[in-house]
Length: 96
View (cartoon, rainbow, N blue to C red):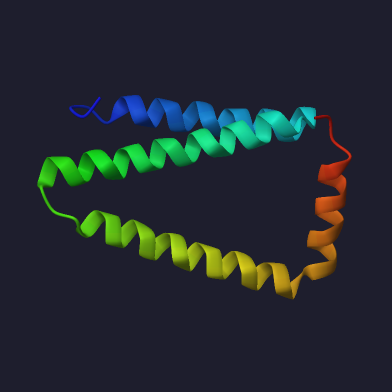
């Protein structure tokens, strides 16, 4: 796994397809599992990058980017609160 990049990329692609299938079929389990496996794929790629170069800065960069993404997500949520709450209510009506 640590020698090539294509295996985590295949996992990431299948995860995105799972998320899209969950959205199209309105199945929450596909959405949650696809998101969690996408996160696993990204952490795996960062972990292998850290091991291959012998430095820890990729962890810091990935955590910094994750923090920026969370701040952006919270900003969008606050700016469009009514739309986001309606989206959450629609998500609750999907199949479990």
